[in-house]
Length: 371
View (tube, rainbow, N blue to C red):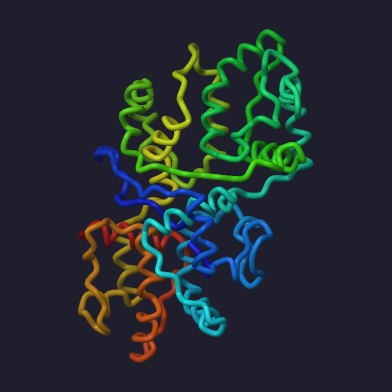
């Protein structure tokens, strides 16, 4: 199985004035079990553990592997995967959208969507940015700064964002007392730092994990914590987080700190999870699409031949109670794709191919526009 996140987790597209939109909750622990029980692990490895037939989903993944890119790649290679699975005697998984969301969470916990960091560069950056002045590996070196070995945020990217948010004000004050200049970070630098810290023997016990919620309570937190007071108009976050990873967001938190005159409102882990599910999750797994371009894809890829006429027993599109997203498409691919391929072969039709990830996003935008 060549998965996924994405295995995606969105029910409705995000619009600037839309009411709170729910996502499908995902949990990496459940996703890890699905990865094994559905026998994905026979072909694919995650960080070296698993089969060697397909790509290792935790290593050597280029930065452009967005959920949409992965979804398009999975679709394009589905016939080859199904053929290989048939020969190996592997039953085709019957993924529900909820199972797909759990797999997304699992792959995110394995840092599938993060460009791998360079530990050696990370060590240099960790020292060059003065992090090591206060944070020792196993002991605190200043003002009660927690040692790296106790950073649970190294395992959970949501906790990393929370840490960068909750502690930057106090850290900025510590920098001022020590007459140290606040140094900004790039996403690449933070990725390298995390690569270094995660490679240490002292942090080997921290198993990666990730989970998201529906985000249903996120808007209330966004209002109650005062975020909405600043993030309006040109600073609104409705459409600014597309294709950003949580590492990218953590960097923005850090770089934003010097512009905050007062201590920002503190967030619990659950509040941050709700907030990120509301603001970021939908945008990360649902890249913006163009409706007009999506209509052209629907026609050019011969979707309309069957799905507008009922040819080959194809169900009408649109026609789902849920809005379309990568998660619903991937779920449908694994549940109905083999039968769809057989009927297309019988009719002499070629399996449709997406030329890039944007075509997937455009197609979804079009299908949702005519629900």
